[in-house]
Length: 280
Ligand code: PAF
Image 1 (tube, rainbow, N blue to C red):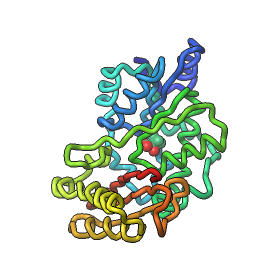
Image 2: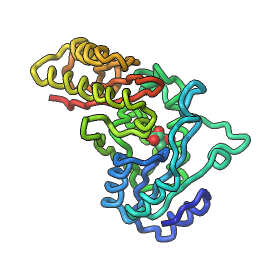
Image 3: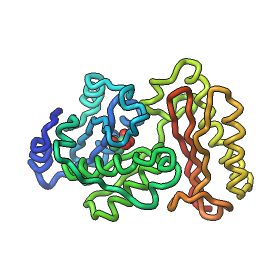
Image 4: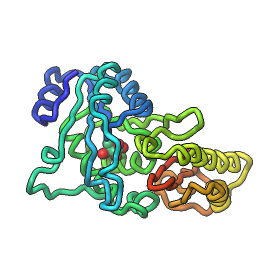
């Protein structure tokens, strides 16, 4: 496995054998089974697999958890080596944002609601760094997790709008046995908050069960989630949403699929999760 922070070296490796397909899994490290499931999808679907590990500062607001974001490069590299990854790109801030850097990729509509309303600068940071990573690695396919539902929609839109020559592949959310969506941020939860956090998935499932029982009022679905989460004293709701899965606008009536999603604080740690219900 080649580990490098050198952009030219990544490109050299990428084009040594031009006929090979490359899968790419961008990450911020502190890898868990969710990341590794994307790595497995990439290994199964491509001749070569690249992973990037970079905690991108531009997607964190000054008030957010950049300084406490968990890191474990040695552990991550051991997992990726064992999985059979070919190349790991580990840049630093000076490499990604050298002095004089001045370009931002921002999207006008799908970045506004949900995560965007709570984190207004987040998606410009994500889109910019992912555009750079795509240009550096030049993958055939790129792999992202459904847990970050809005991120997948934003990045698909960016790939369409900017004509990136790659296929986006979205892998299912990996969960702990109690249903909590796997996230590097789970490591930041106190024992008490960790015990309370599975309410997020329980609430999403309760809304899904209501939908399956015939409920089509989006507000009733939102209220179902709100009631269940707010009954847990450790949980502080940032938002609950029942939105159109394409535009991410809040729905009144569910007619053609719905993205049920929520963001909830447990202490200082903000967790997100979602269930996508495809059209009837
Ligand atoms: O999903 C993430 O881990 C990050 O947003 C990404 C895509 C690696 C960009 O920094």
